[in-house]
Length: 363
Length: 272
Image 1 (cartoon, one colour):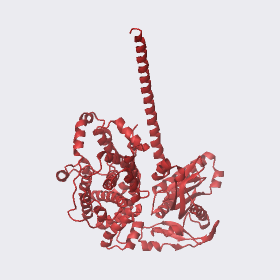
Image 2 (cartoon, one colour; image 1 turned 180 degrees about the horizontal axis):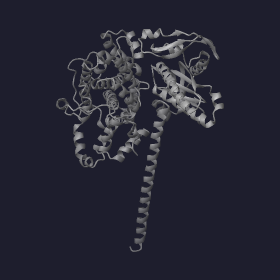
Image 3 (cartoon, helix red, strand yellow; image 1 turned 30 degrees about the vertical axis):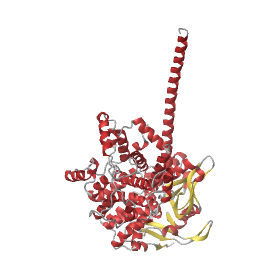
Image 4 (tube, helix red, strand yellow; image 1 turned 30 degrees about the horizontal axis):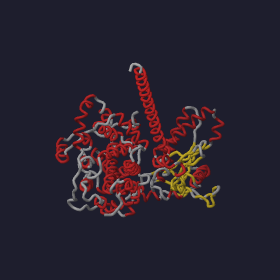
């Protein structure tokens, strides 16, 4: 029985892969990997860098075990109906030695909620945080505490869910082609190479080391970043955010408004307050911001920004095929770099607003 | 020794038969579980189309009684004007075709603008915006859906004329207010819907479309949340059955791209 998700309607890819050997080599030197899919995003340099650095398997986690991560990746990708990420996770598990019948059994158990109680608490939280109907709050963390997770593990679970939500959107919005992943596991050469690939993959799953921020974070989401003090997550996330704000492809004003729209749609007052500082620096009054996020129009908003804000709203809750149709309309109005940056910004905003709501404590 | 041999063989054969039977039984049970799980997955996916995912989850874990939430949402009521006359004029098959086309165009227009069909009531359709998931843009979505329905009806009328069928016209009423969202119905059959005076008001406003001569009307509670680029015409306050105060409504004329300040000024006094 194939997973129903593997039949979700999926558009043709909206982006052309554009190899850049220099950029790929630089990324490989820095992070140790430059996966093929980054070629779709190289026109907006911060996004592939952020995506590779934010991989939870790559020296980011100190506490959470990898089997729980795999489970969360399956659950969140399924909730977001991301056929690309779901297929990739399935393939990873197959390569790590899980047979197709065992894979299907796991999917069935997840559908029935039949997993051991500790994992069930994490799965339940991951589903709620992903759906955000309503947004999760600190109260939603209690069942995980009761199930035996430490606060540090809970922060890593919330970060993992947010990161997967980020990856799901950067794959779903431009409709990255999932077919190759879906078919790869059953190819004869992959079956032959499986032990080797599995060994390489296991070797690539590395735990992080405690680190401190090179400089204390400030600006939007600084409170959130400080909750990851001592964890490799904090500096990596801070760097991704800094590079996103500094990128000149879309204006800082536009990016902050896209964050504000997503915070408003999700009902996350904390996220709106985070970007209010940026918007104030950009010369917008709270009344201007209220008008703009309510109607995607207002003082200083041009037609392109208006379209981007309306699109940002579409990325909060969606059916993949509808979102991809709207993304195609937007793609026709923008350059490739602008479109890719827009995909990155809305994906980051959806991830961070959900994470901000899940981890509301002040430092 | 020789006498025990057949007994041992018989015991071994019985054990082997039992083992084979158990294996077969196990395979059957696994297959049944797989089929049940597949059905459950399909059911969960289907339920997700009818109610928010959180509601479906609570339905599975806590039962239907647990699901009831107070929400502020926007209700739209659409109705086919002159349905009775149309039903008398057309044979049942032609009527069903016309109705199906109308239902489909409303459903498409509404879905495109993030609305959910609540109930089909004869030729009327009850639609919700912001009832299933949070939606701070629900009033804009409802008004935009109203305009999309108007455009779709115009296109549909061209088709109907080509097929020698009578044209249709619609009335749309939109109102925003509180309601209780939950699983409502009998013990045997329930549906996820919203109840409360907001729905009645939307239905009443829809009936005013004939009186005011405009196909899309909305109330003050919608107008105050609406994008200023919508062009509205204020209608005179009129008494409505079941409502103590006369009801002020606004006809939706269209949506311009002018700046918001100019847009606000587009609320004009009705000549009616």
